Length: 568
Image 1: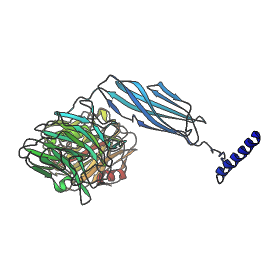
Image 2: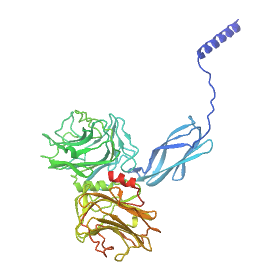
Image 3: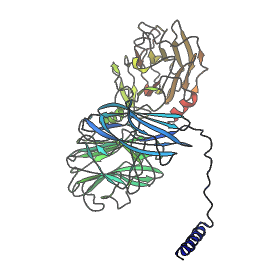
Image 4: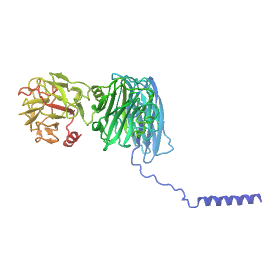
């Protein structure tokens, strides 16, 4: 009887199971298809170019990456500087592996992280990441007290201390410098104590990629407790102004507040993908706002800044101390944030911008903007000054202004010039004298033209010519006329057996052809603003014209690229 009952119970259970599966398709094997692609490796840390700056000599590092494959991952090998760190052969998800592993003994110096992924058909993908662990940061600018580069961490590098993270900010995966930057998020910001960073004078400097959403936000704030109390500290923020973003500074002196609003001079076009440099300075008597090194707003500050109750800086939000007009979190990117215990001058700001410069265009090996001095921002060196040239109002910022018997020289050995090059600049002609050298490179000797190049003008501005040396001889292009009153964009190109001159993106005349290669034999430097000392035979001496934004390239630019630079 008991056996019979058990049989009945078993039959009933089978019926229940069958009822539960009713309407559900049975599991069927599906062919995976052909294995067509190699594995894909995505590394989230460290990124290419990451600089890890900590006080300790040896530190651990978290290596974070993901491997995916269209069919199945067979193995993953992780190496540091050629030595195995980890090997993986088993995967819960055979098409996707997300790994976070600790490498415990990272030493000071340059390193190469290598990740090799192999799929079941033995297709291999290898990814190398070059990064560096450097000693603790040493301030490079006078008065610098705070430096946060946002290279994968929210750490201030002078004191090696971390900011407090509010909400969920991110990293941009790109930066003005160092490969990464702060990326804002709704309700997110950083806070950092003000202790040791405040005084009679205070300045801040940083780069931003400006996002117009939201249409207003706090950028940097140090204020007392209470919403929108503006009689102490400062507030630097942005607001919509006819589709642009207008940056403003507000400073409290203890009893009242002062506004530094430059109007349209403080406007930035958002969402362009371009990095914009912003800075403000506060002294005992004045305050100023700088955008890309130019004064956007400045004025008197009676009584100086009062820091009473200002115990924290808010970075990339007005919260929690300045939110009354919705100056909340900023979704823009920020990079290279620095504080100073001095009031930065315009020259100081321009020097900071120059130190952070990286070439903007492919093949750019030289960039001299003349905004503060005669420095090349790519190479980091200053030109040698001959005579008494000066700086004057330029096409952008300042410009080189020539003078009688005056010019600059700059060595070309490190520019890597070969069988193709280009040079571009803005030019506003002064037709007295009626002929002059503009930019020249040549070997020793007067008027030896078998190497280097010569770009010059004659008959006022009616004739601009180029000449290039090809070792056994030279090649001429007679160019044409340019404006004698307006700024024009001049580009000389050479390579591939021809050379020519573009003005405002259009060839003055057809490119001249030559046989052979460009020669740089015995050429030591470029002369800017004169033919002297190497090209003077026909009176092509100093040029009293204005020259701005000189760029040299180690390749021949296309017309489309020239026109794009001109529009930029």
